[in-house]
Image (cartoon, rainbow, N blue to C red):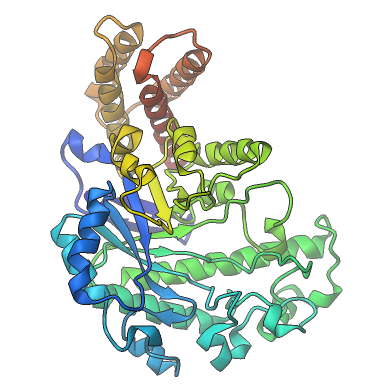
Length: 475
């Protein structure tokens, strides 16, 4: 993802484009899949530790680092913005040192992509309290319905509070202006998830109460729980607008930096049919977000331990992968079932994998990221989707035997559409989409035997169909 990047988000008046120089060769359209590791630097980290750490990361097969810069309400670097808002200027465990610069310097020298990982609206650790920001600005907190038991409420900022918008915009702008990151990876951009105690309908803070009254003409306390009630529907829609507005604002702030950067944001992908109800906190399911093209999104959850939950998780990941180039966030802990998850996702048209909390960079599960489907070029450039489709079909044909009928079909398709460049006719796009879908179904039903190339062929077919769908949306 470090070479050619282009992402368009939003619709109507909200539309932003963040791109690098347009690619000119087929190789530019087939990029190595992202193999990212989430990195939170320890308290005793020294600048001299950076070369060995980066070397271990690269040796383990990773090509991207998500470097934690804003976590639990503290920054990993000395921050003038935090001081301006009268918050601690840095995590005190780092003793005033700047561990971000040496890691960035060495990683860039080694050719790795580095994103700044920021936790967005979550500004505390649920086990350790609310963090320094909410201790100083309690009026910024998202509040539950009962407005009591403050210590048990999730340490979240209210997404509808405009002072919160300005603070996050200033902080993220400072990160992108002060350090040569290639992008910003934002986590926790939503209202708090429904807590286990059963308090619902976040947020009920004073800011939300006033805004809902002014916008909808009704008090939050008078709105029933019935999801079909008009006031409940309007409240859910209003909350979705607040999160969308915050995303739009943060994108505009990121676009004002001196360098062009990619902004990724992480959706919450539930791992069961029970528990969190997205509509209860104004948060839209990940599939709906990408269908609306609001943000480039990453799905978050390791593969669940229960077989029935695992099947549900894979099905939801498959649905999400059908409508966006997604970046799954997996777990590398011993009980995270990393290898099984990678094997289950090997056929999905996903842009890459992010590994959280690795225990040992030299452990076999992590080393395997450098091999298999995750090392093959499969990620595509979305700015010229039809050229990317052609590149995918040519790459797929090369995987097959010369006498394979699927290869002959792809060659015929390319002979027809290549003269049109990026101006394929709509009937051509529709016909190719249906043919690829039919071939995929036949391969999965084992009526077409492609041997060991089958997983890569299916993945490329799905990517191609996804890009064809993207063209239909755009036109």
